[in-house]
Length: 368
Image 1: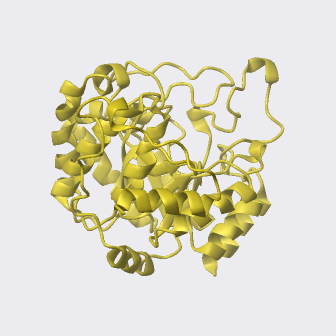
Image 2 (image 1 turned 60 degrees about the horizontal axis):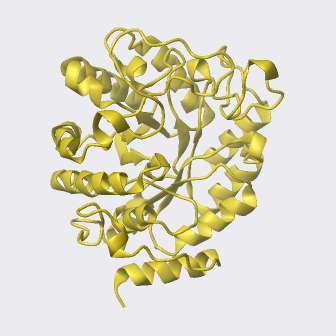
């Protein structure tokens, strides 16, 4: 029995679900499949477990500064603001966090490389000041196109994360396999530059690739992306989030190729436990890189103690809503006004807690 079949059976058994239909090779577009790709340089289980034992309980937030509504506005020369970042990272550290997850954009590398790298170094220096490490994310299919350097469109009132930007972009690159190679230098140069930086805790290659709506193109791109990253062979682990407990070609690829298992889940405690029990079968450290959706009963008071007890990394979304406006639930609009219950985030812009009991719980569990 090959390892793909072993994974398929273990996944179904752990999730206690019926086996979905296997995708036939003839259904997949030519040259865009994992069938001929073998993991190259993936950490052994023993190495992954040793790394996990060397880490503290990983806890933190997805971080976008309040002045930025997307990755470009966070990092570009025009708007990068280390004073605001310094203040907000101090708040993260006071909460008990030891990790922040950040997002970058290939356009910054292509049009403002020296400034972009300088700003990343400044950010890492500020993280070091506040005893934080970084989960570094390259790509995402989420958001909109096109992406441009310079002033960004204003956030849409009462809309959750209305101006996020795709990278490298479905129309710009992802839908054109002949252009995929354009991203190789960006990935390898960036990873080589920061390869041995101890402030990088995890390399997160692609944010939620399963959300693409065009899985075969994304799957082909992931195959190349992993090949590029393995050439660099960084001392920090490589991962990308598995989404859900159903077998998909992308889930198989990520489970077979990630050094540590990461996932996203915005569901209640029962569903969260199902996810964690499934991923335990891989015997590797587990990090939930996105969680906290109060309007879906994914709350600090229920989920955080469970993550702590299970030693599952806990990276919630986010810190302060700012221009992202992620305290509004998905599908919100002006007609609904201010929500009585925040969807994401922990603090108001004046740094007072949305819920002081939540902050106290973070502080209590991170001190134990």
